[in-house]
Image (cartoon, rainbow, N blue to C red; front, side, top):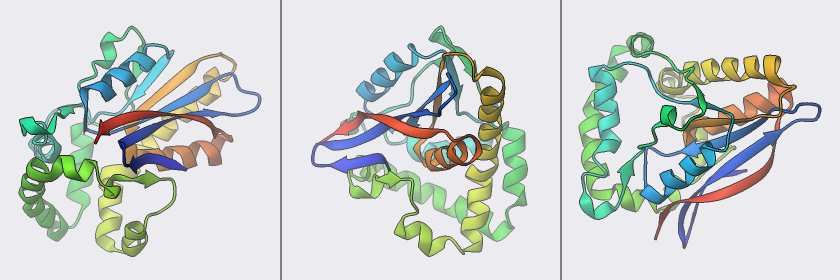
Length: 234
């Protein structure tokens, strides 16, 4: 199942609707990118207003670590020729109930400190390199096949799946956060399945394969329809 698609017309994100027999509650997954065209965020905002509950990503609080990590993509719109903007959706101003099950900066820092020192040093050394590369080549990468994502492991994923570094990286940046999210979604299934509501799950595209697998395996929800939104046109 394709989640982020690249083609000659540009890069698109698939908004996925998941249903299961016997439940009135439906999940609508919005695979997000940290930077995109203003039109992409406007299209997402328009659809979120029609939902009944928003479950949104966002590490709560501020820290130097979070600032440094987010700098790697915040530099992209600084290149005015890119035409890109950082995700600017004000979720709590949309008139829809918002739930944020993500970790706090303190919890994220705790997971970061659990990573061996040698890997943390490697990442600190990589951050400025990535930021410079994103400033000059972020738009080109966003319009390349490299950005594609589906629900199956990529060749790169399979290459590094047994890597100790990859294991620590996944646990720190995704694993614990995905579990927190799936626990929140499970609670909604338990308490609100009889309600005819659309629950929007607005998380980074990289989290979406785990979300889909979790909803399929734990609750029998399956993707039934998809709507493509253009992230950036060529």
